Image 1 (cartoon, rainbow, N blue to C red):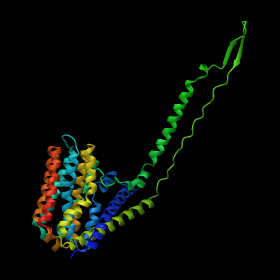
Image 2 (image 1 turned 30 degrees about the horizontal axis):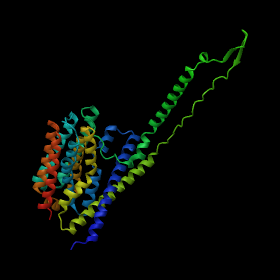
Image 3 (image 1 turned 60 degrees about the vertical axis):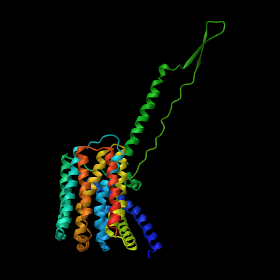
Image 4 (image 1 turned 90 degrees about the vertical axis):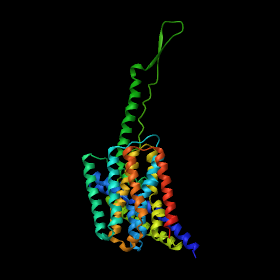
Amino acid sequence: MVGVDNVFFNASAFVGGLFLLEFGADRFVDHTAIIAKRLGVSPTLVALLTAGAEWEELAVIVAAVSQGRSSLALGNVLGSSISNILGAFSLGLIFTSGNVTFDRSAKIYTALTLLFTTICVLFLAFFRSMGRIAGGIFVALFVAYFASIGYYIYKGVVAPPEDSDSDSDSDSDSDSDDDDDEHDNLDKRSVSDLSDDTLRDEESVSPKTITTSLTLPHKGSDAHETIPLRSPRKRSLPKPKVQNKRPRSLTYHIVQLIFGFLALSLSGYILSHSISTIADAFNLSGTVLGITILSIATTLPEKLVAVIGGSRGQNGIVVANTAGSNIFLLTLCAGVLLLAGNLEELMSSVTTFDLLVTWLSAALFTCIVFFGARCWMGFALLVSYAAFIAVEFAVYST
């Protein structure tokens, strides 16, 4: 019998874990970027560390593996890669008006996504016995991708990926440090502009044009009487308020980075534990819940970025968001899972249907980016995603 209190408690913990996950990801990404800039690290490296990197997904996977839920972690990897394309990229197309074409950088990122997806699917389908070796290969592929993309961005061949996970309000403290110099410059400019404008007003009323005396004729005579007038008042310049913000210390950002990492770790544990408990309560497959509910929840930021990017016509952000996330998932996250997870549980939980949908979604993504997109394609992808979720629950739920 299903314990109603147990289910509601874990469902509430799952929702709370999502908020903690987003908070931790924002803190981790924002303060990593600031520390890297303070230490003189290349901006290219900072962009790769903070953009398109699914650190929250990695935290969930590590937590699931530590709790002996390797199938849940695998479902999250495959489900998130599918959700990023069929569930997030589709929304970007729906909110885009007219025909959409993509630049060279978008096509390069998309081609890499299809390449890494093909390698991952082939390993999981035909080379399962390699296990730990495959995990090492995936991690090596991520390192090679990281280094090569960093080199080509430095050379100007491709544009750096856009940041997708740092748009929330929680990063206001960290952003203020980077904006200190800009505020000071703006204050200085406002002072000079104000002084110039006021001086121009004073100069326009020059002493030559001001009547300092009034001459009146006496009644009945030709004599004149001169009456002095008050001299014009000098207008004093207002004293503008100059805000002097002191930048935060490096120690502050390191502490915030540690807090972000701890929040990520705690949220990963809460999410994996709560969804596993719900799966046991309803006798559901952990892989299916990872592919459906968990992946939908953890990719909500990508869906929000896709909607905003599509509505504003920033198609490059939508593509980089999807491609960067999937490459991170199918290389580093999959590699860590194969290196640390239960191989027997992993191999028994993989289904041909899941692998096929994972590869087909990447292939559709590549075709759309290379040949151009239409609004109706977004609706078609979204309907396909709804059909995929329905099949998962109808056929593979137990």
